[in-house]
Image (cartoon, rainbow, N blue to C red; front, side, top):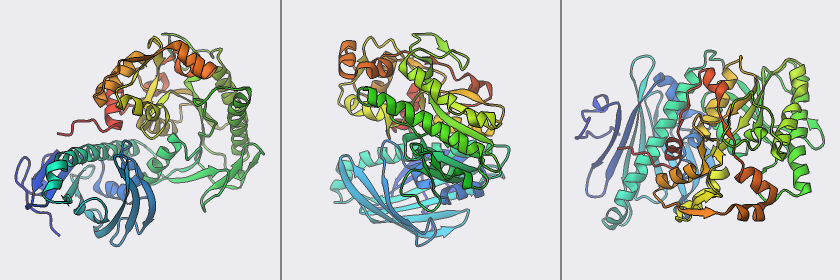
Amino acid sequence: MSPPSLSGKGAGGLGGFESDLVLYKRLDMKTLMFIKRSRIPAPVEEVFKWHSRPGALERLVPPWDPLKVIERTGGIQKGGQAILKMKAGPVPYTWIAEHTDYEENRMFKDRQVRGPFALWEHTHLFEPDGDYACFLEDRIEYALPFHPFGNFFAGEIVRQKLSAIFTYRHNITAQDMTAHFSRKDKTPLNVLISGATGVIGSALIPFFSTGGHQVRRLVRRNPKASDVLWNPMTGESDLPKLGAVDTVIHLAGEHIGRGRWTPEKKRIIVESRTKGTELIAKAAASMNPLPKTLICASAIGYYGHREDCLLSENACCGGDFISEVCDQWEKAAAPAIDKGIRVVFLRIGIALTPMGGALERLLPTFTLGLGGKIGTGSQYMSWIGIDDVIGGIYHVINHEEIEGPVNLVAPNPVTNAQFTEILGKVINRPAMMTVPEFAIRLAFGEMGKEVLLSSTRVSPEKLTDSGYRFRHSTLESALSHLLGRINAE
């Protein structure tokens, strides 16, 4: 089916639209069309491949409106199908989409077989713009159920939602393509990841796979065909049996921010990091050939409570429990360093995504208008958006001069009071409450003191000095992107 001609801003056929466009058009009494068009800084063939690879759907799903893939067959070619679990507010539903048309490097199309719309046909269009860029265009013909009441009651909500979703999708596509094409060596990487089901790992895997890299997961149980077994508690590992691996990314570890730190909980926190890191470091050191890079997660808790001091990677270790954990955690990688493997320690700040972690836990309270600062609110929060976590890790892999500790934080840390104010502003809710410091200490003990009340103001010196460009350098920009509050008009 050929796309219908449209009138309005930028009209005149596919080639006549402006480089960044959101447009709506009524096709008949029931049917509407939504169009989002953007210029992507990569060749059309590469952008089309990106959409055809495993992980593209996961990469494009907006984090404020997640879905679960139940079954997927056939990819984006004609006849392919996806069964998804989604939600409309709190109400779950099943969406079944079938791919109905396909032309390599030009277009593919899918339609709703089952779902909330009376009609949904989505055409993905790709048009070259010279040798090194292209236009990406999403055209959706849709009709709401219960005409005309569906349009009357939900029409504007659907239009706003489509604008937010496809602005997010196009931004992710452009930014990911920029990251992949900034890499001088275009040879696909072989990457091995532990902690693959965690917040960072589950975002990192589709980034690599859509970029054409090979990714394998380190798992403790129920392995799939490409998975690699390991068990840090028993010291068992299949890493030495593997062939060439370019990068090992070690993210696994017991969560530290939930519940009180009993002596048993502390022991588990320490051992989950030190034993796991030591096992991976020893296994990497025994591989033939050796991995080029071992990247180990750490945390800005290494620096401890430091009030308003600005801390680079050269700052000394703090004296808190978390500081001691991070110090032991990093030292456990010594076998890999001794073998000559490049080892990087990611001292990760507060990684922001509504899919997990601090932001996921804060959102329900803030959405109800009950959000507020913790204690005095003067404690610094060194945050980073999940897409810059991914971008920072990829940057580290591709810059062989970087080794040792790397502060994985955005360049503009904020106080807790500022964080509260900005989050409230982005979601348009009041955030006037205060959680007293004594209540935090009473409820959470040492964990509350070190995780919620500690002040750590950190600078990403190694990243910025090596040329990394943040996707979102301010908190308002990051939250607007992650929560779908960017004005797409």
